[in-house]
Every structure is written in C-alpha cells, then in structure tokens.
Length: 163
Image 1 (cartoon, rainbow, N blue to C red):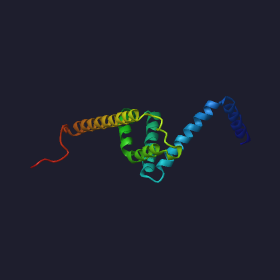
Image 2 (cartoon, rainbow, N blue to C red):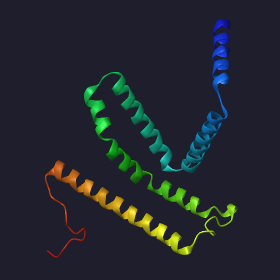
Image 3 (tube, one colour):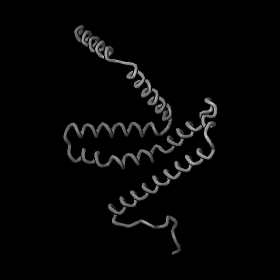
Image 4 (cartoon, rainbow, N blue to C red):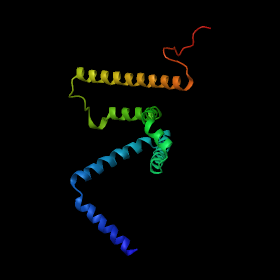
C-alpha cells in the first residue's frame, strides 16, 4: 500500500514538472464552461437527457472496444442525426442560455461601441442561418420519412385541406 502511495506521488511530481501556465488556464476555462453548463441544466429535464446522452456515449465506446461491428457502425453513421436530436431536445435550455448571454446586465452594455447597422446586419445573418438550419432539418426529416415509409411528404401543407 505504501508503494502505491509513493508511486502516485512520483507520478504527480512528474505531471507537475511538465505543467505550464497555458495548461492551467486551459483546465480552468474548460472547468468554468462545464460548471456553467451544468448550472444551466440543473433542475431541468436537460439533466435527464444529459445522463441519457452520457450513457449512449458509453455504449458507443464499449461497442468500439468490444468490436461490435453493427453497433459501432450505427454510432459512427448516426452522429449527424444525434447532433440534430440534441439541438432539438435541448432547445429550451439553449434558448435560456442565449437569453442569459444576451442580457449580461452586470457588465454594462457590451454592444454599445458597435454601430447599429452592423449589429442589425449580424442579427439578420444569424436569423438567416437559423432558417437555413431549420430548412435542412426539415429536408432530412422528409428524407427519413421517405426511406422508412416510402411516402413522399415534400411540398405538403401541414394544414389539412377541404375534404
């Protein structure tokens, strides 16, 4: 047992010898961002979703480690769809985070030094990008429906017509 503790302290000394200011700042920034993320999710359904995503990640790693070919293939090729699903599932938390970022009330008005024209142009670009993302997501959903059910749902109105 004493040998184990001595080995631990020797390894700790080796790490500390190679540790620089950049690494400390890197770890501090990552810790701060993770803390803020977890603080944002606390008390919401996002916490349960996050636990589920972590479990999915563990299953994906285990599938790769144990060379489960089909499961590994599914996790590798479904990455984009999982990303879209995460955005959809965490939409309320993302909206709340963007709202909090936009307020920044205790820092004064951080955008006051920018011209109104450039600020409005940036907002318009962000809105257009969000619309494009929504259109791409809709196209992917239509493709999935077509592949699974064989039904072409493109260009259909979501409002039912007269019968």
